[in-house]
Length: 378
Image 1: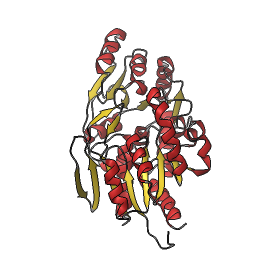
Image 2 (image 1 turned 90 degrees about the vertical axis):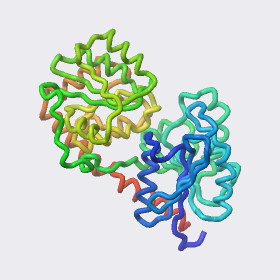
Image 3 (image 1 turned 135 degrees about the vertical axis):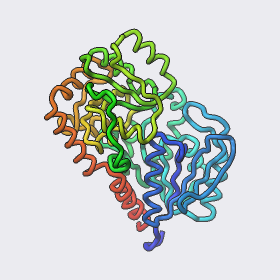
Image 4 (image 1 turned 45 degrees about the vertical axis):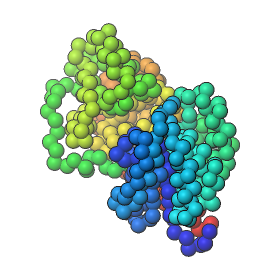
């Protein structure tokens, strides 16, 4: 590769905007940020229907491969192989950036054998699909062997990840980053809802690893002047409804459902404490905690072994970390913050400072661009 080569990047991920999970949000922010800097960066991903589509957004191309179906949280997209081969044949890119885990994209890269430099962003280990992973891990190892650089979102995850253990020399820790949410909706008046209550806020998809059932049980142990608001949807809603009925927290737990961006901003402004009660390494980073930090809100999170959550939310700096799957510990930590405004204020300001120092989207883009430039010039 010539010394004067400018990075030309192809971002490869499962899905892309307007689909927004945590990984997709990172992919979107990175792609948009690079193109604002006039760095060519396109996207190759799965469509959410069985149809191939391509088009431009803000001057860059998005190639959406027809999805036959989805199995084990993986889009089945055989068409990614000929499409990737075609893009590489035209020599449009000198860097491929793969957002892992993405089994079909992994196979496509191994089959097409690109000459481009390969950056693998390791968002998380594959944990839940243990039987399928037994067959896939060989290909994952080949991918990591082929990678020129592996980006890991926290030092905790790098140290705990067994698949990364033999490839640590290739790894760089680059935290995720987001825009300053508190600046996005300036002028929106703070909600007066529950003005006489201490408000605890949480949000996310209703899945097992999020641990929301333990937050529901914690709500029943809080004083009557507290209310816990949970925003989001998902397959466990019926189970959560049953737990609310069983624990009878006297109106201290409220489902907000799916909320708009403006409503979400109101909830962040209104809450006294933000809580992330996740229970497994599937919660690899906890992007929503960064949103709470932008609003200077103290955080109660869980100390998941090997996850980055307790590194993002530093105990005593931006919030309090407690053992996972422990409603009593959640309730105690929440009351410690709601009963001590000076402590809550100090930790909230600490979180805001930590966000500005480590977790802005601008910092994330700058750090990853530096990796691209180093690879392009070597």
